[in-house]
Image 1: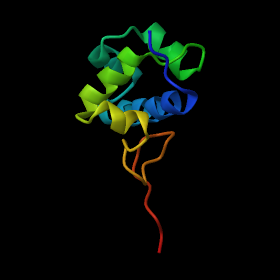
Image 2: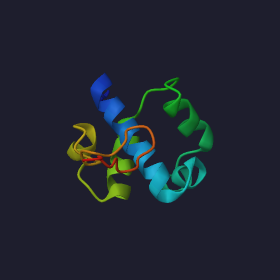
Image 3: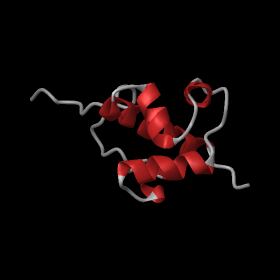
Image 4: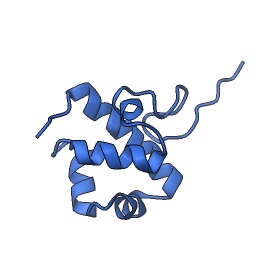
Length: 91
C-alpha cells in the first residue's frame, strides 16, 4: 500500500470540502465516491488517513488528474479551503 504524505492528505481534504459544496452535502458526496458516510466522517475528522483510492476517486469525480488533487492545484486558487466556495476580493 502506498501512503499519502500529510500535505497530500490535506490537499485531498480541501478537494473533498470543495466537492461537498458542489454536490450538496457529505452524504451525496459519499454516495458518488462509493464510500460510506462513516468512512467520510472519519476522514474529514482526521481520525482516519486519506487512502490513495479515495484520492483517485476524488480526482475522477472532479474531472482532473490525481496529481492536481495531491499537489493542491485542485480546486483552483481563490477557493475557500473550508467551504469550497470561490472567495471574492473587495477592491
